[in-house]
Length: 236
Length: 379
Image 1 (cartoon, rainbow over the protein chains, first blue to last red):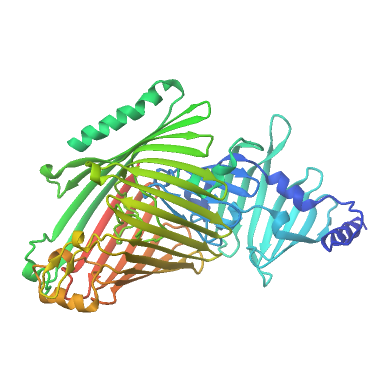
Image 2: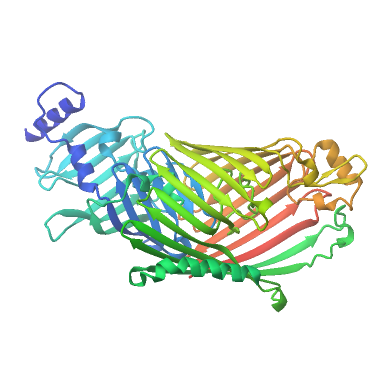
């Protein structure tokens, strides 16, 4: 009965029926829980449980704009990637050149696409079309892409309504095939706030490979100016 | 020796602000070693190098060492950065061919992220073309290895950043007063698009340039071009006489590059790039050039001597980007110079091995083929 009520409420919200919304805006809550303006990231790519490659990255964000600066390995040191919502560029220190990147290209030989990591905005890209609570604790939210430019047509998110955090997500193609899964693992900070501590991205089409991303020193706010997230700044 | 002295002066000048606040200075070091061995197979029938007239060795080696030092300091909002990139080069393990230069040596002051002042030798990052950058008046990339570390140019640069673009003012002092050059460049960023326009006063000549690129989900398309009233290329007259670049500065020449790259999936990609150079040889001039060889061989370029050049490449890589295979093709529509170049790149941790071959298919070519093995290590 409860599940039915939630489903109906969500359907009302998503179809813009003018009723007083009693359910929280789950997409906004997902975005909020994943939002950090700074993090140190260690990214590890595995095949058959064997570490293939790793990166250490400084991650910066201001609303939808994101910037990554590669610290390790030495061969990638100084490389920078910027997404300003509609463009993505990569700065190559050895040539001092910036090249533009297609959004759907694989991210640095990992299981994630550029878009997976450099555009994390559920409220902007998806509509909530269904939600149910089969086990009484975890919400299963079904999201549909707002348009064809979004990487995955359908996403199912397992959401913990008590802690207001996503636990995992499954991404499906237009034909309904499962393409990727992402698992989120959290760690409580000394001030009792929850930060995502680990993200595991699995390419379901590959089967035997996955990418782990460890987040540390996460900050919800940092004081980088707006111009830090521009093409001109990427070259400096 | 002169360049080392000159470099050391800039280095000391750059270090002053850093050393004055030494405790909070953040230093960073990197060392890159590149070892290239090449096998050259001369084309005996070449009309440029008949019977190996140029006496090109079959085997050659190039060892390069790049020490890179970066230091940064924050003076309460005013950030100071020093970047020094040296280059120690040795040919064929010959002790007399050891050379040291600074590829980059500059200091930069940045105020609140928006205003940047740079003094020193720094690479120019102009242009959107992947192989060819006509807007870059100073130096061109090696089209066979576009990721080579290029030489910087001594400059004084001020950059002002906005949220939708940036404005650059450059001054390039020369050794003599008449070598003085300057440039203004405006860069714009919009939805999926970025573009720039530039004006360059290059010694006593002018260049107006532009570039633009558009990014889709799976493709990138770009264009870059200049109109300039100077040329750096020789031309050949009807009687076989050489016309030097300085005698060709009476009118504006366009040079245009456009290209597209497409990522079919995580493993497969392709690129196409086209270049037009008004100041290079027409079909008739190519015929004259061939007729009066070898005295005109200064005009010769192994990739292209004509006005129109095409480049196409296909790339396949494993999804982890450890192994990358490419086939690259260069074709000059007027001289029929054709080069097919397979390339294999293997990466593991901080090591990279590149095996490339260039197969030349034209009587103008100096070589039948060149095969190179390049090992890079980053520390």
